Length: 176
Image 1 (cartoon, one colour):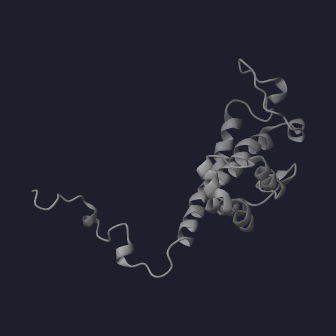
Image 2 (cartoon, helix red, strand yellow):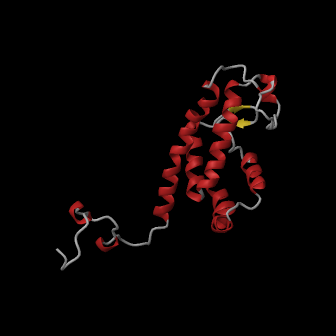
Image 3 (cartoon, one colour):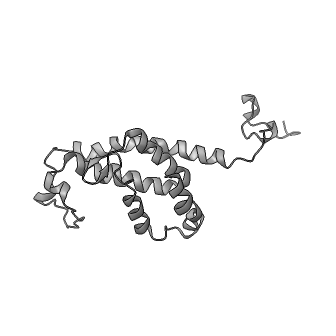
């Protein structure tokens, strides 16, 4: 994962940010899928069946490269794939169901998840997503530490005062 990030993501992040889009996002998503990263914490149906820790570490590496790519992976795996994996019928899991746009919104009978009723199914994906999301700040922190200026940290380098009293706003000198 770290190698993919170093070769395929990190060199392009600044440009993507500047342009406000990821060039060839579909190609990148296909690469991530081919590596088994999308839905990697799920078992069967072509998913990698990795442990929660392995999934978290992959999210950490992705977040260290770019938060948007980590979001792509965790949203696809936890929000899109998990609900179908957990609550869908065998037929739904075996097929690829395109998103259907209908006005007014009505769910066709073959789109109903037979393993659950009410909002439990759709909302369970949010609980599933928490684990991948929580690893994100660890990746961002690792990235920040890796980009720190080499050498020891001097007191003058600190952005937060050592003494909390120093953080309190003070009136300008000569105006009391």
